Each structure stands twice: as structure tokens, then as C-alpha cells.
Image (cartoon, rainbow, N blue to C red):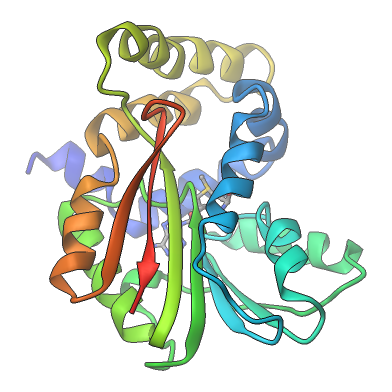
Length: 240
Ligand SMILES: C[S@@+](CC[C@H](N)C(=O)[O-])C[C@H]1O[C@@H](n2cnc3c(N)ncnc32)[C@H](O)[C@@H]1O
């Protein structure tokens, strides 16, 4: 692995990048994805094999709590979400978001998921939306091992990430948009071209969720692979 791609996956580098992006992440998400990320989060939560209303689970790489609304819809007030994110600034914004919510069944647990102190067999479910692309292949293996360790037997999981579609007709315009148009939007509207340029770079290197899928299978989880909108996002879901 080259020195520059080693740095790309250094958790300190990644959390610094999200600290900077936290200022504009909400707005950027809205204008750059045309609402797709909103609907994909919804589908990802729906793909979680059935959980009870009093379940306890983890939202990994939780950002500012973008998925909480959808998870709360199925959980009810007796359930609990533990939100795990490495970025100090994302966690600070998540705390502000939590203060605004009526249902406060969420606990923030700032943590690096690759090196965490989450108890084993403690979760009924694990969810993660758009937090996998900044992991390299080895880190995805660690993530799979952690999911298998943290879930209770019969616990369920669903994770989704922006991906590189297989069909050339879709791949060319989509990657053009991610790699060239989004950085321009980042520069013109969000005053941060560099970090938004990284999105396309991470997506090209990440490709899709197939390596994570394989890693979850190797951890003896019942894992399924899923394409969202012809592979513009992919996901994994299943049970322990
Ligand atoms: C693209 S954001 C996704 C946020 C949110 N889940 C969403 O749906 O928009 C990725 C998040 O993953 C977090 N993250 C990256 N690496 C992490 C790690 N090793 N441990 C915990 N969180 C991490 C970042 O800080 C960032 O907030």
C-alpha cells in the first residue's frame, strides 16, 4: 500500500476530515444526493431483519444522527440506540441534534469502531449508513469481526454505502458526478473542495460492499448482499 493511501485510511486523518466537513455535511448531503441518501437510509433501516420495539442496538459511524429518525420509527420509546462515531465535531453536532429530539432514547458513545470497548454479545441490532467507504479491505475485515462480536445471537444488521455501479452507462456519469461535480459544489457553495474531492476517491477505492459481505460470511454471519438503484449504493444485511 502506498504512503498516501495509508494516510487515507488513518483513523486520525478520517476523523479530521469529518471534523472539517461537519460544518457543511447536512447541507451537502441534501444538495449533492438529490434526496437519494435520504431514501437509501430509509431502505437500509427497513432491510434490518425484524427487531422488537424494546431492542438495544448500535448506529455505527452515526455522523450527526442522520438515521435516528428512521430507527426510532421502528423502535419506539422503550428501545435504545447507541451512536458510535470517531469525529469530535460530528459528535458535537449529534449532541445538538439529540437535544432537539422529543424521544431521547439515544446515547452518544464516541469511539473508533476499529478499536473499541463495546461489550460482546450486547446488541440486538447494528445499523450503519454511509460510513464504510473510509475503511480499507483490512479495516472492513475488522469491522465484520466487530459486528459478529458485538451482536447477540440472532441479532440483526444492515449497512449501506455509496458504490461504483457495474453498468458502464451508469458508472461513467455517476463517477463523473462524484469525482468532478461534487468537488465543484464543495468549492463554490461549501468552501471546501478538497474534502469533497475525497468522496469520489474513497468511492473509487471502495467499489462496493462485496468485500464486507465476504468478510461477514467468514465470521459465520447470515449475510446478504443488496444493490440499491442499480448499484449506486450497495448494502449488506442479515443475522448472527
Ligand atoms: C459519511 S458520514 C455518515 C454519517 C451518517 N451515518 C449518515 O448516514 O450520513 C461517515 C461517518 O463515519 C465516521 N467514522 C469514520 N471512521 C470511523 C471509525 N473508525 N469509527 C467510528 N466512526 C467513524 C465519521 O466520523 C463520519 O461521521
